[in-house]
Each structure stands twice: as C-alpha cells, then as structure tokens.
Length: 153
Image (cartoon, rainbow, N blue to C red; front, side):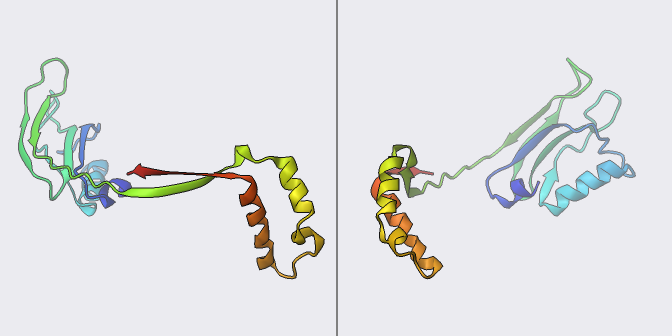
C-alpha cells in the first residue's frame, strides 16, 4: 500500500474484497477503511453491491482524485452489481534523459588481462595501502570496452 500512495499519479483500485464494508462492527472492514484513510485513499462505493445486500465491491481512489460519477447497477449476470464510474484522469508524463555507461565484461580477454596484471606495478611492488589497489580498475578499463547510450525514462 505504501508503494502506491507515495506516488502522486492517479490511482484506482477496484474489485471484490470479500469484506462486508457496510458492517460497521466487522473488524476486517473497519481495519481496511482505516488503512485507506491513513494512506489518503477513499472508498467511493457506499451502497450494496451484492444481491444479499452487502457492500463487497470497492472503487478506491486517492482522496484528492475526483470521481465524476459512480453508479451501482442491479446484479445481472452474477450475484455482484456492476460498478460504472467516470473519472477525470490527467496524466502528466515526465520524461528525463539519463546517460548510462557500462563495461562490457564479456569482451574482456582474461588471458591478456592476467598477463598485464602480472607485469603491472601492482604486482611487482604491492601497494602499501588499500587505496593504491584502485590501480587494478585502470588495468580492467584498458581491457574492457565501454558502451554508452541515452535512454528516456
């Protein structure tokens, strides 16, 4: 639930939750409605959706999202009522372009790399501290190609 509510894009959750949301002393129903309220969500179906008189189906949106209309039609093909809603969704696409670079390690010639490593100052006169070990990355960079591309998000 947290993952959905942190984002600001429109959110609509619909379905049969198998809870009697109209029963005010039902622990599970009260708990669900409380969780929705805490996360800034609203359950819009306020009338029975089942042929036995209970509200089992939900239409949930963010509290700041407007629902233009919501109709609960009588059950026809099943024991549940169809819910027909109209919402105004304004989706804003934010695209960013990022530059991604990586090493193509599959192209690394291990034998040549090992030979260069054996003959490097890194092996000939081992470093006195850990930061000097960074020199191994320079040897790796020489032996692996770099691929770069732009990607839109």
